[in-house]
Amino acid sequence: MSGPRSTWTKLSDEQLLAQCLVDTYRASGPGGQKRNKTSSAVRLRHPPTGIIVIAEESRSQIENRARALRRLRRALYLHLRDSPDVQDESWQSAWQDGRVEVSPRDPRYWPIVGIALDALYSEEGRVRDAARRLGITTGNFVQLLEMDPRAWQQANVVRARYGHKPLKI
Figure 1 (cartoon, rainbow, N blue to C red):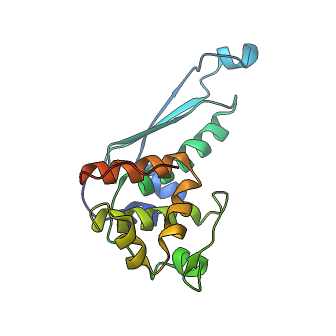
Figure 2 (cartoon, rainbow, N blue to C red):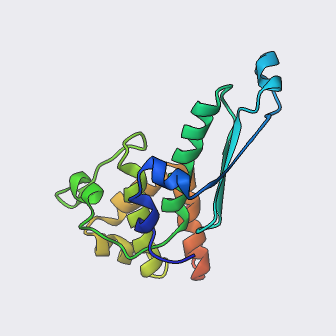
Protein backbone atom coordinates (compact mmCIF):
# COMPACT_ATOMS: atom_id res chain seq x y z
CA MET A 1 0.00 0.00 0.00
CA SER A 2 1.42 3.39 -0.90
CA GLY A 3 0.34 6.95 -0.33
CA PRO A 4 -1.91 8.51 2.26
CA ARG A 5 -5.55 7.51 2.79
CA SER A 6 -6.69 10.72 1.13
CA THR A 7 -5.28 9.35 -2.14
CA TRP A 8 -8.38 7.12 -2.26
CA THR A 9 -10.98 8.91 -0.15
CA LYS A 10 -10.87 12.05 -2.29
CA LEU A 11 -11.74 10.08 -5.43
CA SER A 12 -15.25 10.15 -6.86
CA ASP A 13 -17.29 6.94 -6.62
CA GLU A 14 -16.59 6.22 -10.29
CA GLN A 15 -12.83 6.71 -9.87
CA LEU A 16 -12.70 4.55 -6.75
CA LEU A 17 -14.78 1.84 -8.37
CA ALA A 18 -12.46 1.88 -11.41
CA GLN A 19 -9.59 0.89 -9.09
CA CYS A 20 -11.50 -2.12 -7.78
CA LEU A 21 -11.87 -5.65 -9.01
CA VAL A 22 -15.63 -6.26 -9.00
CA ASP A 23 -17.02 -9.77 -8.56
CA THR A 24 -20.70 -10.56 -8.80
CA TYR A 25 -22.18 -13.82 -7.59
CA ARG A 26 -25.38 -15.44 -6.43
CA ALA A 27 -26.03 -14.85 -2.77
CA SER A 28 -27.62 -17.57 -0.72
CA GLY A 29 -30.34 -17.05 1.84
CA PRO A 30 -33.83 -15.56 1.82
CA GLY A 31 -35.07 -13.38 -0.99
CA GLY A 32 -37.21 -15.58 -3.14
CA GLN A 33 -36.66 -17.15 -6.52
CA LYS A 34 -35.17 -14.05 -8.13
CA ARG A 35 -32.30 -13.94 -5.64
CA ASN A 36 -31.40 -17.54 -6.41
CA LYS A 37 -31.35 -16.92 -10.17
CA THR A 38 -29.44 -13.66 -10.47
CA SER A 39 -25.90 -12.68 -9.57
CA SER A 40 -26.83 -9.70 -7.45
CA ALA A 41 -24.22 -9.96 -4.68
CA VAL A 42 -21.15 -7.73 -5.13
CA ARG A 43 -17.60 -8.12 -3.84
CA LEU A 44 -15.18 -5.22 -4.26
CA ARG A 45 -11.46 -5.85 -4.01
CA HIS A 46 -9.28 -2.75 -3.76
CA PRO A 47 -5.78 -3.98 -4.73
CA PRO A 48 -3.85 -0.83 -3.69
CA THR A 49 -5.00 -1.27 -0.07
CA GLY A 50 -5.88 -4.96 0.08
CA ILE A 51 -9.36 -4.13 1.40
CA ILE A 52 -12.23 -6.43 0.39
CA VAL A 53 -15.90 -5.63 1.05
CA ILE A 54 -19.14 -7.36 0.10
CA ALA A 55 -22.79 -6.44 -0.15
CA GLU A 56 -25.48 -8.99 -0.78
CA GLU A 57 -28.55 -7.72 1.07
CA SER A 58 -30.51 -6.51 -1.93
CA ARG A 59 -31.80 -8.38 -4.95
CA SER A 60 -30.48 -5.47 -7.01
CA GLN A 61 -26.86 -5.58 -8.14
CA ILE A 62 -26.87 -1.78 -8.50
CA GLU A 63 -27.97 -1.29 -4.89
CA ASN A 64 -25.41 -3.83 -3.68
CA ARG A 65 -22.64 -2.13 -5.65
CA ALA A 66 -23.52 1.21 -4.04
CA ARG A 67 -23.56 -0.41 -0.57
CA ALA A 68 -20.22 -2.09 -1.18
CA LEU A 69 -18.71 1.22 -2.29
CA ARG A 70 -19.93 2.92 0.91
CA ARG A 71 -18.44 0.05 2.91
CA LEU A 72 -15.15 0.42 1.07
CA ARG A 73 -15.00 4.12 1.94
CA ARG A 74 -15.79 3.31 5.58
CA ALA A 75 -13.07 0.64 5.60
CA LEU A 76 -10.55 3.13 4.23
CA TYR A 77 -11.25 5.46 7.17
CA LEU A 78 -11.22 2.61 9.68
CA HIS A 79 -8.12 0.73 8.58
CA LEU A 80 -5.75 3.17 6.89
CA ARG A 81 -3.87 5.68 9.01
CA ASP A 82 -2.82 9.14 7.92
CA SER A 83 -1.51 12.15 9.81
CA PRO A 84 -4.40 13.71 11.80
CA ASP A 85 -5.73 16.73 9.91
CA VAL A 86 -7.84 19.06 12.06
CA GLN A 87 -7.91 21.46 9.11
CA ASP A 88 -9.97 18.91 7.18
CA GLU A 89 -13.29 20.35 5.97
CA SER A 90 -15.34 17.62 7.69
CA TRP A 91 -13.59 18.18 11.00
CA GLN A 92 -13.85 21.95 10.83
CA SER A 93 -17.56 21.88 10.01
CA ALA A 94 -18.35 19.61 12.99
CA TRP A 95 -16.00 21.25 15.54
CA GLN A 96 -17.41 23.99 17.76
CA ASP A 97 -16.18 25.31 21.08
CA GLY A 98 -13.86 22.38 21.76
CA ARG A 99 -16.37 19.67 20.81
CA VAL A 100 -17.15 17.62 17.74
CA GLU A 101 -20.85 17.04 17.19
CA VAL A 102 -21.76 14.55 14.47
CA SER A 103 -24.03 11.52 14.19
CA PRO A 104 -23.15 8.22 12.48
CA ARG A 105 -25.76 8.99 9.80
CA ASP A 106 -23.94 12.20 8.87
CA PRO A 107 -21.69 11.81 5.78
CA ARG A 108 -18.93 13.55 7.76
CA TYR A 109 -18.92 10.85 10.45
CA TRP A 110 -16.44 8.42 8.87
CA PRO A 111 -13.93 11.09 7.78
CA ILE A 112 -14.07 12.47 11.33
CA VAL A 113 -13.62 9.00 12.85
CA GLY A 114 -10.66 8.52 10.52
CA ILE A 115 -9.07 11.70 11.87
CA ALA A 116 -9.76 10.63 15.47
CA LEU A 117 -8.18 7.20 14.86
CA ASP A 118 -5.22 8.90 13.13
CA ALA A 119 -4.69 11.00 16.27
CA LEU A 120 -5.00 7.94 18.50
CA TYR A 121 -2.44 6.11 16.37
CA SER A 122 -0.03 9.05 16.28
CA GLU A 123 -0.28 9.37 20.08
CA GLU A 124 0.47 5.64 20.52
CA GLY A 125 -3.01 4.73 21.73
CA ARG A 126 -3.25 7.34 24.49
CA VAL A 127 -6.80 8.73 24.43
CA ARG A 128 -6.04 11.83 26.50
CA ASP A 129 -3.16 12.85 24.23
CA ALA A 130 -5.16 12.14 21.06
CA ALA A 131 -8.07 14.26 22.30
CA ARG A 132 -5.71 17.09 23.25
CA ARG A 133 -4.09 16.93 19.81
CA LEU A 134 -7.52 17.34 18.20
CA GLY A 135 -8.58 20.13 20.55
CA ILE A 136 -11.49 18.23 22.11
CA THR A 137 -12.18 16.73 25.51
CA THR A 138 -11.38 13.12 26.31
CA GLY A 139 -15.09 12.52 26.91
CA ASN A 140 -15.99 13.92 23.49
CA PHE A 141 -13.28 11.78 21.88
CA VAL A 142 -14.62 8.61 23.51
CA GLN A 143 -18.21 9.59 22.71
CA LEU A 144 -17.33 9.96 19.02
CA LEU A 145 -15.89 6.45 18.91
CA GLU A 146 -18.72 4.90 20.96
CA MET A 147 -21.29 5.82 18.31
CA ASP A 148 -20.34 2.90 16.07
CA PRO A 149 -19.05 -0.51 17.21
CA ARG A 150 -16.61 -0.70 14.28
CA ALA A 151 -14.98 2.60 15.30
CA TRP A 152 -14.79 1.43 18.92
CA GLN A 153 -13.27 -1.89 17.87
CA GLN A 154 -10.66 -0.19 15.69
CA ALA A 155 -9.71 2.17 18.53
CA ASN A 156 -9.05 -0.89 20.68
CA VAL A 157 -6.96 -2.43 17.89
CA VAL A 158 -4.81 0.72 17.90
CA ARG A 159 -4.55 0.65 21.69
CA ALA A 160 -3.59 -3.05 21.71
CA ARG A 161 -0.84 -2.33 19.20
CA TYR A 162 0.80 -0.09 21.79
CA GLY A 163 0.16 -2.39 24.75
CA HIS A 164 -2.79 -0.51 26.30
CA LYS A 165 -5.85 -2.11 27.81
CA PRO A 166 -9.02 -1.96 25.68
CA LEU A 167 -11.46 0.87 26.20
CA LYS A 168 -14.68 -0.23 27.88
CA ILE A 169 -18.11 1.14 27.17
